[in-house]
Image (cartoon, rainbow, N blue to C red):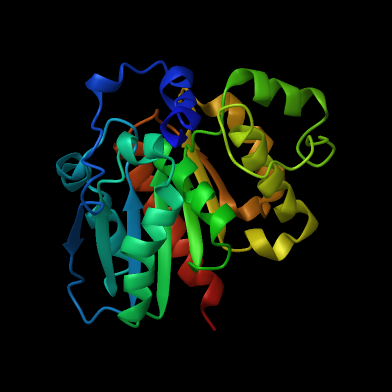
Length: 251
């Protein structure tokens, strides 16, 4: 049963599922559009952290952070909550219900911005649909449980880590290693990470896992700032990242 295959999210994050938004998986992923103040050319899709619903995202300041730098960007706030992960199809449903319809609307660029559990969601989507969005902004992404992270660190990092044989089907025992197997492809093909950006706060509770991901990214795409595991830190980092993305493309 696929629901069981994703139960490690609850256990690893120390959750009591009833304390966090689960979403109604019988309905499409909830979304809310924050329209750009000028004609929109790009779209930023925001994936929430484990405790966030759309109302929390609306209050978080992330829309203002994006549009203060990219005024030509529509922003879609999503309710890709815990229940969609437990269902076992967050990547497929995100693609079918949000990303593919956005592409059909003709945006020149579509970016995924994920915080905490949403950062994991962005990486899972990249694993299933590589190249389907123009870039990822990862804000203190959840990268897995301690045993797997220690295993990778003990091997000298993801480049030298030997993944077990590839699994045909994701389940509770293999999903984290399968994600890191995907991240290894970024090492082999650096162009895959050319539009991936990572940020976290110095007091973030996931900070010790971030260095495992850092070597896979261009050094200029990694930001460590004051702050913790919160939207105040992430919104400030997002402003910096989006400005750097535009500066990179300036003549």
